[in-house]
Amino acid sequence: MEDFSSEGRRTRQALRAAQLYYVQDQTMESISRELAVSRSSVSRLLTYARETGIVEITVSAPDRHLGDIERRLGDRFGVRAHVVPTPDTLTDVERLERVAMNAAALVSEFVDSHMTIGVAWGSTMSVVSRHLVARPTRHSVIVQMNGAGNTQSTGIEYSSDILQRFGQAFGARVQQFPVPAFFDNPATRDALWRERSIRRLIELQTRLDVAVFGVGSPFSEVPSHVYIGGYLGKDDYRSLRDDKVVGDVATVFFKADGSSEGITLNTRSSGPRLATLRRVPRRVCIASGAQKFAGVRGALEGRLVTDLVVDEALARKLADVR
Image (cartoon, rainbow, N blue to C red; front, side, top):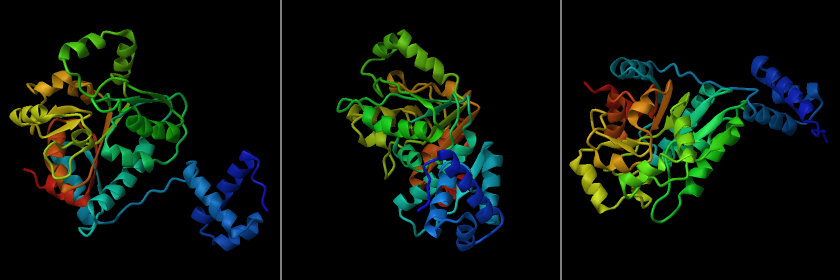
């Protein structure tokens, strides 16, 4: 039985196994002989190498069609587009899983030490958080971008699970935002925003290096978490329709042109102003499913995104926008 009690020895073994397997193209059997371990131990070492960041795998698709779509999206919206190959035979759940896996690997490339990373909670972000590739950093902070409480729940457990996965993946400190997603009265929000403990978190949100978020769609066939989790009432939906809202980022709503002015519900939202979001150097938007088209297009028109990760069908619709 091999002794992996020493973490340093295990890391050296994993590095050696990874070099032999990925660089020198040796078989598992030959590696097991060279390292004097079993084949199952070689498999565990390679898994450890991937999980700890010793090995980072990048898949470059030679699909010229997808490359053309990415170029067109870049030309039209000024973003770096990452289109995930997704056959039309996939279910919505399978499509989201593929997009989330690719997005998680990409986010891990963007995060580094001494960074402040903003994370919005939501259905898409929950799946992304489960696929994050471990990349330990130093002195990094994960900041919750918007409150999660509602009349049925504090929302802390749901949002905390997402944030903690990000924190664990990057060895980062987590800063939660313990306020409602939407206040009953705008004056209550304004008063709370003057409290020093809350001002500290809002100040962190203004100094983000990376923001990671999905796009909510209030009237799509597959509603986002904010629209099914008890956050909005009938009057709120009526207000969104009257204000011609097409989507939201971190519970801040916008219209088809990406503008947020004149939207009543935004006066009660805990999310950052879109002007604040636009100042973040890297803004990663993750979406899957054609039902997200109007919301994602609005976010793109509003210049809320620098990096877009989407499935193939949604990308085609967006690339055809004139």
